Image (cartoon, rainbow, N blue to C red; front, side, top):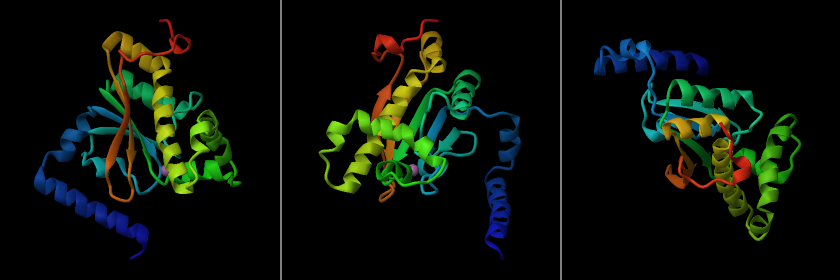
Length: 209
Ligand code: CO
């Protein structure tokens, strides 16, 4: 059996297992989705959102890109955030990075990777902003991992600067924004930061509605 054929076979086994547990499983899911969470994570294959949080289909709206970024000119992520906040009315948005992130590492190492270099410029800007702290870390792995954490915190901050989130905060006092980091070596998720409608924000970033 070819590797991709195994995916299709395993899918059939999964359907059978789900139906054995709950004959209405797919019928109920087909009606609508009412996820409580939006997950913005890294595309890394080792960090599957549903699996590491033990959530089922329908429980989590998911967006993944290289290094879990919220870039304010990225129509893809902004469309996902808008739909999640305004249509699905999610209560929580989780930005989740992971230690040893290849995207963050590549940003530090300045490798030539084509179009990804443009994407990684956003992380270089975060490095530059926190250069004083990061330049004092000699161990390269520790430096990458600290930048992974700072990147998560900055992406949560980027979310708070969007009109989508500020508008929802003013009208509905939701969503709560969470910054987490996943440890690929032991599977544990670590909370790093949290922002909600009452969190202080510099005036320059406040959008008057
Ligand atoms: Co990554």
